[in-house]
Every structure is written in structure tokens, then in C-alpha cells.
Amino acid sequence: ESDLDLLENEIIEAEQKINEKQIELAVLVNADPVQFKINTEEPLLSAIPQIDSDTSHQIQMLKFNLENYKSKEQEAKSSWLPDFNLRYKQMEKYNEIMIGISLPFVFFWGPQSANKSASAERVQAELELEKQKRTIDSGKKILVSKIESYKKQIDSLKQKLIPRAEKRVKLVRNLAPRDMETLQNHRETMEALPELKMKMVEYRLEYEEAVASLEKYKGASHE
Image 1 (cartoon, rainbow, N blue to C red):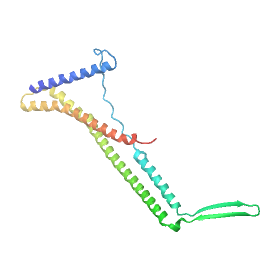
Image 2: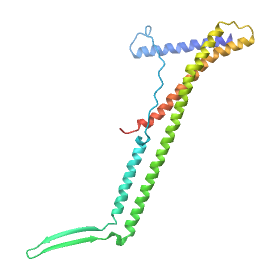
Image 3: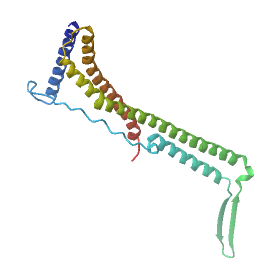
């Protein structure tokens, strides 16, 4: 009886908070607080987003850097090639053609050093790109696994555990407890139903948080 009295006080407190929120919402929508009522419906679970790791913002940036380093490497390699230049000069009595050529490989240490540095940067960029891909893929798989696990537990609660608990509640309401054992069973049955409903709410929150984390990959992607 004492426990029931405490629960009744908690219910009264919860109802008061609901009334306060309804009044606040009525003020926001410019409605009469007395007549204003809210009809709530259980929202559907968010769909699992399909994410392509290659379209994420981080991968796109690393790909851009890799192409930049490839261009630098190509430029460094081209510095080994000789540089030709042609000049034509026309005079009254004769024509003059001059061909010039520069040989950068005569002083090979300059181009060679630049070429090695550019190649090392390109290799480092490739490794960083692959590492980031693996990181995103593994993170995505973990989140998808969590989402699927929460979905199964929510379905089990909604389709099996909660309906069974509701049936047990109906049964015990029609049975008068005659001793301590049946009284304890009665109490456990009545407590089990709200506990299962709270557990489903917790799983729904965890599910939506995992979906939101997975959506971050999609939200940072390029169209």
C-alpha cells in the first residue's frame, strides 16, 4: 500500500509536468490552453541510411590531395627531360636558325631529390587514403551492426514480450492474491510491463542515436 501511494504521487507529478508542457505548447501556437489537446502517435523507426565510404567528405579531400601529389610527382619527373628552344633569325643576305637545349640531368642531384620527395609524398597520400577508407568502413559496419541488433530487440519487445506481459496483467487483475507468494507474483507481473516498455524506449533511443551517427557520413558527402 505504501508503494502504491508513492506511485500515485509520482503519477500526479508526471501529469502536472504534462499539463505544463501542453500549456507552453498552446502559448507557442496561440491556442486556448484549456481547449488545447495533443494527440501523440508512436513514430516509426528511422530507415537505415545507405552510405558509400568513397563519397564521404574525408575521402574526397584525401583523393584531392592524392591527385595533387601525383601532379607534383609528374612535374618532378618532367624536370629530368631536356628543355629545347628554337630561334629563327632572317637577315638580308642569310637566314639564321639557332637551337638551344638545356640538360638538367648534368646536375642530377637537384631533380633526383625533388623526384624522390614527390614520390614519397604521393605514396604517403595513397596510404592515408586507404587507411581512412578502412576506418570509415569499419565504423560504418559497427554502427550498422548496432542498428540491426537494436531493431531485433525492439521487434521482440513489441511483438512478443510486451503482448505477453499485457496478457499476464489482465490475468492477475482477475485473481485475488491470497498469500504472500501470489501477492509477490502479482506485484512482479504488474511491474514487468512498464519495465519492458521503458526498455523498448531505451532501445529506440539507442537505435536513433546510431542512425544519426551513421547519417553523419552521408551528411558530409558530396553530390
